[in-house]
Length: 102
Image (cartoon, rainbow, N blue to C red; front, side):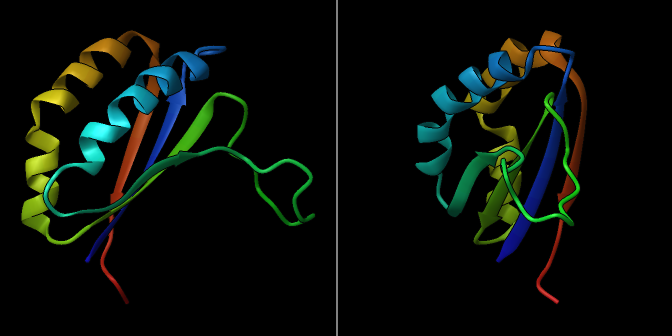
């Protein structure tokens, strides 16, 4: 299994614009061969005192893939290119962490 954490920071006030496109793309991603998990998360409200928040313009994508080949196919999928084109103008930064079980 290949865990992936993507940290997406929108330009000020544009997080919901990106999330709208993200949510529309989720069914296509979850239908991909090898997708185990794919979803977005934002800072929890009223969480524990030791929480470090990402902030109002950032969300995190939590992904799990069966293999590196499945992740590579995901990255090359036409619906991901379309999502990228629709959201490019709203993104301030994107950091992708591809992990492996310890």
